[in-house]
Image (cartoon, rainbow, N blue to C red):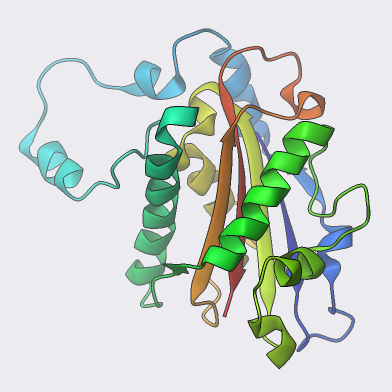
Length: 219
């Protein structure tokens, strides 16, 4: 799995738009897991217990984010996006932070970026054309930037069972810069753009199902 992030923060010296310097981060444990399940069976299926389901497990499932174990496909994207936001908000509210609400303008920005990464075969916060997170969000109709509000973006791409909302959010949460962005107290809104497939430059020869995620966050 590969994850990356970018930030626009007018309150940080030199931090006007760091999306162009966002670094691609590979998580070795997740990459190893991807290689170990490079077969039609998804990682979630390999990890699932067989046999009796305990009452505790049933209780946990009652509060689960529906669709958290789905691999993105054209027919389930709405469920996958809802599950991804649900998992992020679960972590935020656990820490006493406001839950994020879907913002249509940021969703347009995120969707555009995900589709462009797949179409033009790259994995980065800034497009080859040079358009930045701030420019993309502004063109998509997100107006809070003009008032000096911060803006962040986290992205991920993965194959097989690592492409589920649960695996992607877990990867973000275990990477300090991504976790900091997703749990930033100032943020109130989020826009997700998720699509099936991976940029071939990041797929590493993987030919099975996968997903590419973009989450734009703002105040």
